[in-house]
Amino acid sequence: MSGDLKWNKIMGACLGTAFVILVVQQVSGMVYHTKQPEKMGYFVDAPEESAGAEPAALPIDWGTVLPTADLAAGEAAFARCQACHNAASGGADGIGPNLFGVVGGPAMHRAGFAYSDAMAKHKAEAPTWGYDELDHFLTAPGRYIPGTKMSFAGIRDEKTRINLIAWLRSNGSGGFAIPAPDPARQPGAAAPAADAAPAEGAAATEVAPAAKGAAPATTQATPAAPPAATSAPTA
Image 1 (cartoon, one colour):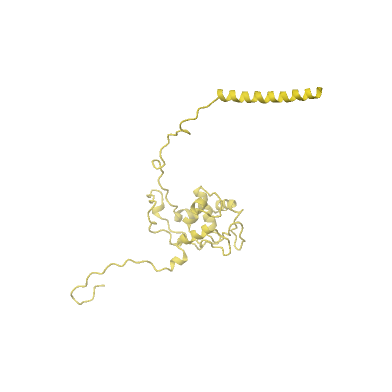
Image 2: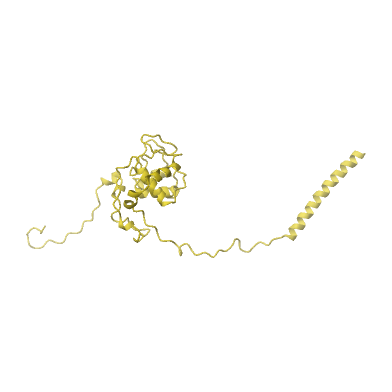
């Protein structure tokens, strides 16, 4: 009999505790009730992006920066790439392809490497790894070639990219010419419009070998009517 009374007391204590907890929750809910705001979030008085947009940066003048690039610094920058890439002549591919001779070489230059479909699509649009193409890719691989297998976030520092590209050029790409300095790319020149055609005098070495052999398109003007005289036209 005393055992049943003991269990009754325990169960009563548990029920009482649960009741107190429920009461406390209800009371606290009424006391600390917060009103749902009519409009979520906070207003930040910031100018529109278009209003404060910075002017487009000039493309890098490779003819000026490459001759003075720091190859030692470029080799040091390549250390962050070594987990996936090899740049030695005859070196094996890793997670990424071997990069020996990549500068000025064709996109997807390593036969047998499993490139992504995104890279194959990019090759159709830009067949050669020219200086500008490498710079864009190293800045933000996923933004330049959406869908690429390369998960590297990119190198935002321009000087580091220049040194790295110069060092990569020294590894099997010495025959890829450095273009002459381009005044249109130097400080003080007007930044090109987003939809402007490539500037005249851009590095011809960035054209793919296949494109070099293609017949240039010509615009043929309609010849004027021949004069009444039968004499040959003046040379």
